[in-house]
Image (tube, rainbow, N blue to C red; front, side):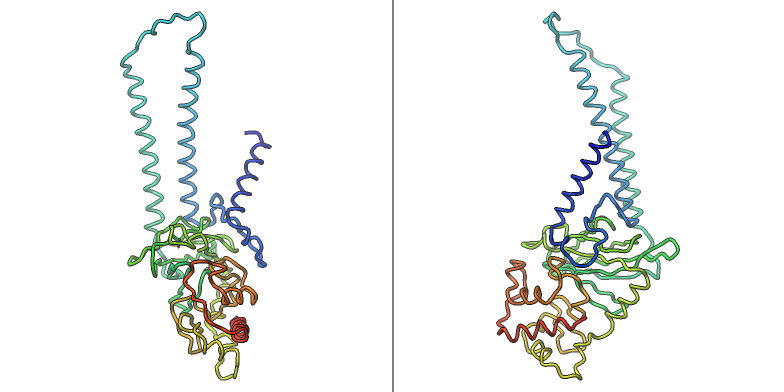
Length: 351
Ligand code: CUA
């Protein structure tokens, strides 16, 4: 392929990938380092193993295609019937040991190479020893959002998974335990690891060792109902120092949760039906059905990364949850405008 054609094809591919990620992702205010979720640019060991295997498979299959279709085209052109040829049937050839052996042995070799390479990659990903100092996170798929629990740090958050960077000098592996609260989901962040199913009444595991800091986009990869397509996940890879800071910040209570200080907005929130499903550490809100709101404003997005997290979007969302994400499980609370304003004002203090 000449260089111009190749760059045109690359641009087209990247543009369609970016487009497929949704335009909303492009309008977020925070810098996004890995905006396309480009699976052709793996940035962690499991993703690289899968990507290398796919490349090998594609190269082998393409070679078979080119050789077979090339031979076919050559035969048609070179030996096809021409004006002046006899109309009688050509001599029929049957049985050539060399040809029979060649087209039996070569496919067997190809199947052998592909199955062995697949088995090797599967084993390398599945049997990888998880070091003792790994970060453990429990991922729970919900219709239609992700819950992340950090049992060692007693942190619960949603939709934005913070993990530390892993370098040669300072390797740090993240081990994920995947569970579902309802139906089957699929956890897939293409640049970090292959897809893993998230299945009710079953625990799956996966791991990742991200090599670059930044935000990685992923999505639920198993149809799970109306808003399956809007079940995005963002993995935020922090430097070890930033990750420690994030942990400390998440463990602390939010300023607005200091119940020794009077706060009419907080009272409005605690008197609302919101607390049946949502929790804010330090307060009487202890619902465990919806996302934990303890540090809601530390997240950049709302509704599983569908819309930027700000007061206006929060208000829209609470006022009519079915407008932004039809079919979702959040009920519409009967709130007056004053109550709505108070609740939104309170939520924005949860930094
Ligand atoms: Cu969750 Cu699709």
